[in-house]
Image 1 (spheres, one colour):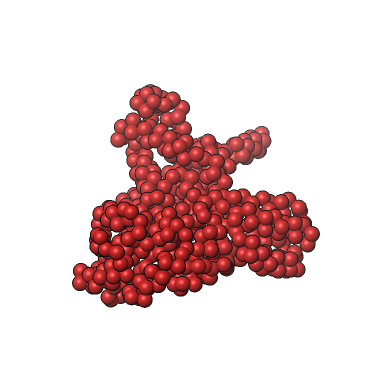
Image 2: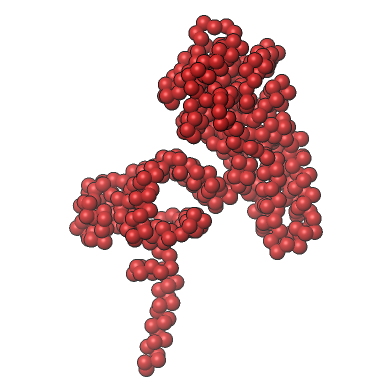
Length: 486
């Protein structure tokens, strides 16, 4: 997601950092590279031009030039303009406290409208509401059946009238049915076309007039680039959209449509689809997305995902054990299992500041293979060895390695890494949320600098292993002590 744009912007900013002192001349050169990166990422020319006018106006001011670190100031300017271009966005659904809230979904065929209807229904149900789907797409073969399959998977009722020919009447009847059945959110899955035409628009306008939906969402495919932006503009002129749901954004390396859409169409992106699974729908936050584009990560979204996906009772148990200073290999393995729920290793790393480039280099297959290998080593240990890895001697290492199908050295490496991690986890147990994030960032930077090294314990550690610098200091201290004795 945004890979080409992120790489282009990073190259422009790296070039400016290497100039030593910023002048108006090299700043203009850097800004031209920023503009080129936007255009190559499929940002529309009018949007890229307007964006660069605002950035240039602020970046070429004397206030920026005189800063101690003007390049960082430029990063902030680009970040703020990205936020302004993609926002403001109200990502709430505005569901009524009483009665039925009606949400109308529209879009072209192939945009992922019906699947997105399922994802939105799941999100609403997780939040404690009672949604109902309406199969109002009477044009596409098997559209009703597809929605019914999604309804069964999510345990959400589907209103359908097989054989019906008037989608306006189907939606109107569904609204009356929802009021009687106790459902409080009605999601209309309307028909699409292969292209925008008058018949499609008139049908949607009649549904809007008859059912008066509280929110109208357009589903667009990010992979279609500026066609998605043009579609949003046309649909908004006919229906006055409340927001756009952009699908397949995780598969679009350019991402220019996400930046252009609000500027060109006037409609904000409200949600984004980030995968095929029904849970892969996120609220769109311009500030967080700007951070991802500039390689700053998105820790808030990662934390929110963790809160949704992790077993909260297990998290409480782990918290209590950490507070007591307890952290075993069993705890470590349970933590790995929880983490897998968030997605692939590279996807998780892309949310962590400074880790996006390493995430791109790390193949998911290799990362998963390593995770499985670690799990195999831990499973080959006895319960006593998992709770007290310090008792594992050379003979135990050979036995564990044989059981896991690895070399004894790999068992030893895991134990060393675990010991360093245990120290960090125990320290993090006493920190607030902000402190934990900072500690995790520090750990990730250390892994990025030397992925194969064991995790160095933080200050206060009583472990015997010392870094080369610490060993040198210790030698000097001992030599001084010997001289004093003489």
